[in-house]
Image 1 (tube, rainbow, N blue to C red):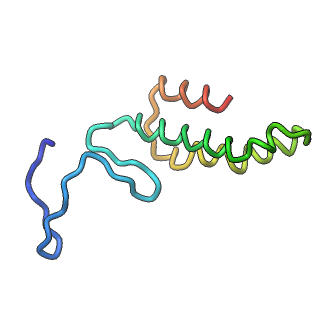
Image 2 (cartoon, rainbow, N blue to C red):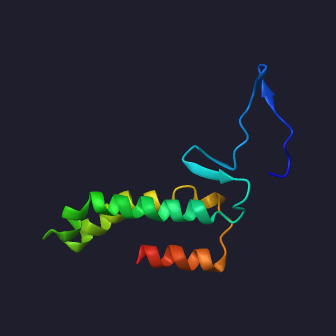
Length: 99
């Protein structure tokens, strides 16, 4: 890391890390464009999709499938997206994962 000055809280040194998860998002000292976080959110979306696999493969209507997707899969994939500074490549990656 660039700054190795130790930080102390209540006389205990705080561990110096490159990344950590806070409020469900990865914060990194190196990944300024949020690539790791975006990939993590895409994975979370696919995990949510897999959890509802029976609904998506079932014989229920498209309207209900879309409702499940919009209420379970999409939020898992886009959680925290308001804080991302998206590059064109990241936008394409997210769009591909959503289709």
